[in-house]
Every structure is written in C-alpha cells, then in structure tokens.
Length: 166
Image (cartoon, rainbow, N blue to C red):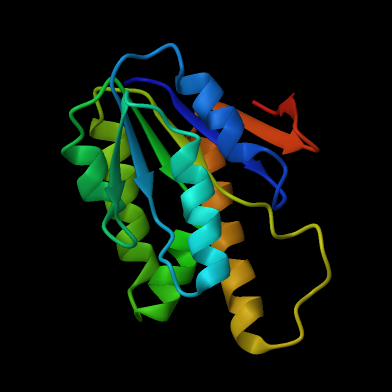
C-alpha cells in the first residue's frame, strides 16, 4: 500500500503549502478540494489556494464523496484538502460520519498511489460553548485520531515549520 501522509496543525499554519511541497516530486497530481464557497471571504481563500497550483494539478471539487475522487484518481499522487471542511460539510448535509469515514478509509487502503491529507487540530483551544461546535470538534478529533493511527506519516505544522510526529 502506498504512503498515507496526514498533515495537521492550526489554521494558517502552512498545511496546504507543505502538502504541495511534498507532492512536487510527482508528475500528475489530483487536488481534492472539499471547501465550498459560502461567502466572499471563502471565495478569496479558495481562489488563493487555486493560484498555488500549477498545470500539473487536476482539481476535483468534492465536498462529500472524497472516497470517489480517490478511487477514480488518474494521477501519481492525491492531495485531500481538507478534512476540516469535509466534516463541516457532512454535518451541514446531515450525512452519517462513520459511513463516510469508512468509505474514505477503504479508498485509502485500496489506493495505488500516495495520498496526502490535510486537516486541522481543533483540540488546542477552549471547549466550545455551543453544542453543535462541540460535536464538530469531537467528530473531527475522532476522525483525526483514527487517520493518524492508520497513516504512515503524520506531520504537524507549527508557524510554517514541519514537526514530524510519525
């Protein structure tokens, strides 16, 4: 099975930039984008991420079915950016988190190519006040822990610097 690399860290820590650096050695790249444009600020962020990628990248905009993008990838490496928005989307659309995570893990196990997965650490801050945000943090933390156990490499980004965890 090819390498699965998980890149985690806080917002703005350089996770996506590092994922692109790791993928640079490969010819054909698939970038699986999970974020949806919900307002002008989000569109600016999406546009900035698009500008970071060159012509060697294909982009699959997939807010929910990321396992399908991994399964059908015609590329040498896959970047999934990011699980943070993916979990948000699963909650927003009322999807079964365990079912979708099982599908993702199945596609990662079957993948014939390396996969780099970007996610956020949400457990460094305070306990959220509202129930929905607490559920979100709990789900993302659960998925991150399961993924970290299965991943070959886990990298924490801190202020743009790489810290190898596993």
